[in-house]
Amino acid sequence: MINVPNKIPVVQLKACEFSNLSDCSPVWNKSTIPYYVYIRVSADIMRECALYQVDEICDKSSRPVIPHAIVRDTNCWLRATMELLNLDPGHHVYKLSFIRRFDNAVFSLYIAYYVQDDNPEKPYVYMNRESCGG
Image 1 (tube, helix red, strand yellow):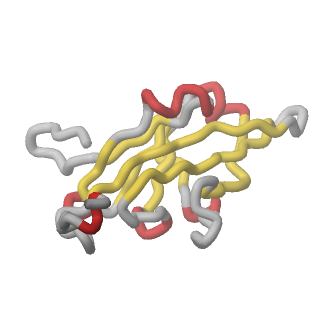
Image 2 (spheres, rainbow, N blue to C red):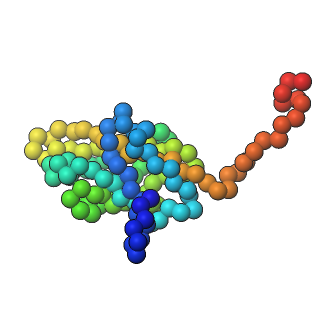
Image 3 (cartoon, rainbow, N blue to C red):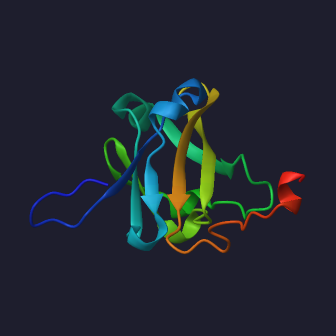
């Protein structure tokens, strides 16, 4: 999250290749996530391509994200409401599928983030002799 004096805190994600996700996966606390998330995409991709599909690839039970609910904010930013994304504690990875306007070539970029919760359902486990095998 970026805090700029006298501005609203902004949560941002960087769209990247799948192999670079570990460098582009911020950790958010569930209680501090604002309403919008901004997704950084290169200006070339934003100029030449259109977003046509968004899928969460780690959690098959989640509902699909509606691509038209993610809007172009500026020349290199997409804006999505947080209600579209999975805010359950854990790691979440989404595939952003783009189509190039000139030749209809399809390619994908990825976004990922971790969500923490201040009040997990079971924050610790009591240990006893039986659980240690003795």
